[in-house]
Image (cartoon, rainbow, N blue to C red):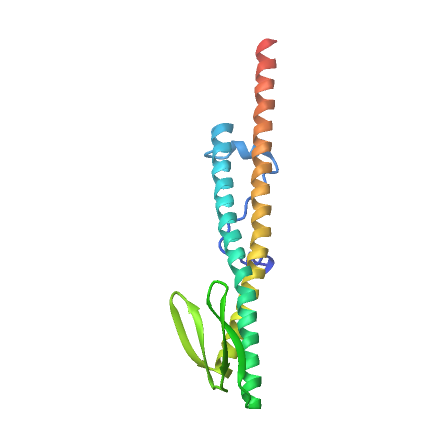
Length: 184
């Protein structure tokens, strides 16, 4: 079995290796002193924390997008039903903060959707419904992926924290043994 089959992709988040045997780990090349190893582990920990902040922001943004997409999709579906009945759509729309105006919209085949970044496009009602359904599905999928990635990331920085503690404790024991050996 390859690692791709056993483990899902986590947006390039590197997996932290658990240090089982600290003595063997400290004998590896590049692990000259406990302070240097702890510094490397702390840098890795900081990178994980930075990734976590970015993922939390992404999750927050997606959580705010999903209700907006749902409400827009509901409005488009309502417009489709009114168009099929041939009835005008009576509504109120926002002019400015706390100021609304009443409007009666005749049955229409098209709707303009705000796509963001100062872009608004006109769509047929069926195309708008299909686009919004696809966007809602994509946003929900991305939200699930971000939640999975956050869980994975938390596991990784917890592993790094445990590794830091194990290396620190190893160093304390080593120093105590040296002090006991030199005092005898």
